[in-house]
Image (cartoon, rainbow, N blue to C red; front, side, top):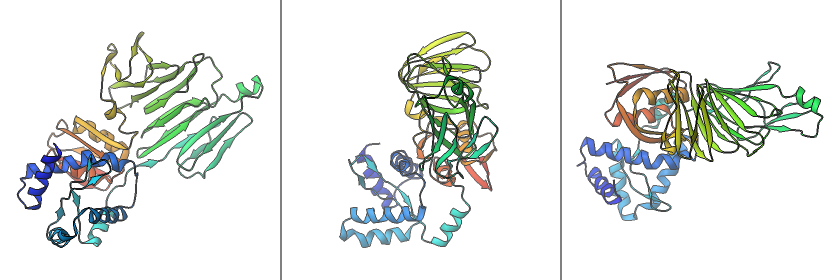
Length: 383
């Protein structure tokens, strides 16, 4: 939809002339454009956010229109407004307005908040450290390795390379970081490799890479920015698939409840090995292995959609409701029940993953794809 078409629909909506389909188009336009901006803000106070937005709106509306505008605002349940951010490419076309603040607070109280930085670090000796409860600073330290938690939720491994070979061998023990449903975490390994771990995932790795390879084990999903070291390849093992690199950026999706394991290359090159066969991936390509033992399939994909989870977004391009709700259930820690055979219905859209669950589900519902009911931490999806 062009800017002129958006303005035309906005004018018609303000006059009450939009059809249900045209109103849904406005909603989808807003959530596609707005979510990218909102994702950078992260979780925040909803009431304060609305106040700031309305202040910005007031600065955009001509003074002689204010009275008529606010009469309009309080006479309907939701007003649709248009204003430009920065470059003029970002529009906010609709903002729900709830006049009864008490009712809104009650709604938010019963809502389900998004996930956040949550994980458990399990040391080689079996000690478990809940990272979201742990204080910032040093978490674990021995003669060769120091583990530090930063204020922005990053776990960093520092390795003392000046110690003797005997001590290096003694402290190459395996650590495990596990994220629950509704959790994510970032780790900096001792070689400088950065790992972003998605919800319901775990990664096993040595405190120090002393072998000829830098090898880790993954279950779930993670994005890797591997520190370059041509003499020591970096290897990710995930459910029978092996990805080998020397220094590159890539994503691995290897959830146990998916039949496929997908490796997506963002930068550099990787080799992907499965069942004795090896393929090389180019930037923008994805390699897919199947637990049934089929040959590796490769093809170019939308990297923005693959990396949406890391960038604070949900991006769906004609995905089935069943696939969408897998992501939703992991991030919001909810169970999903389907009725009326709606699992295969498809939806497309973009929204911040830092919104409460009802905002996401309401916008899927606006497309008339599905309806839903929220009962505690159970989402019921129906026609």
